[in-house]
Structures are given as structure tokens and as C-alpha cells.
Length: 83
Ligand SMILES: [Zn+2]
Image: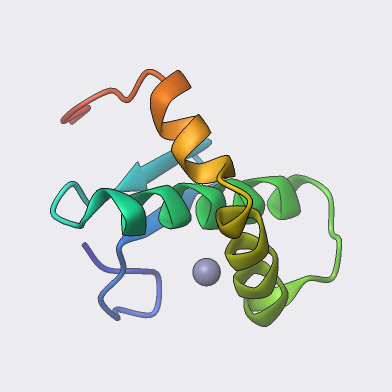
């Protein structure tokens, strides 16, 4: 999976489709942080909070430390292979 700049990415937010895509081939601890990270990008694409990439990384790391990612992984229905 690649981001809009063509770099490798574990997840990405598609604002046109309003869809978060997550690479399945990553450890679950990493996936939980990736989900938070992409959710923050999704929120920021609708409301400009001025977080930028660094702000998203800091916040997603903090929320991950609180266990939010594990909670989300256990409570969100992840669709597989939508295309
Ligand atoms: Zn990002």
C-alpha cells in the first residue's frame, strides 16, 4: 500500500471515498496505532484542526498508549478487500 506521495504506508485515508484503508500485513499493535492515525486524518480532512502529519503522529501515539487502538480493533467491523 502506498500513500498519495507514493511512499509505503500501513494505512491511508481516501477522502473522496471517505474510506480508511489498512494494510492487513502488520502486527496488531501496529495496526491499532495505524487505525487511530487514519481516523485522525479522516477527522482532520473534515475539520481543519491544523494538526498536520506531526500532530497526527503525536496524538495517535498518545491515544494508542491509552489503549484506544485495541478498543477500536475489537469494536469496529473491518471490511476486507472492498475492491
Ligand atoms: Zn499520516
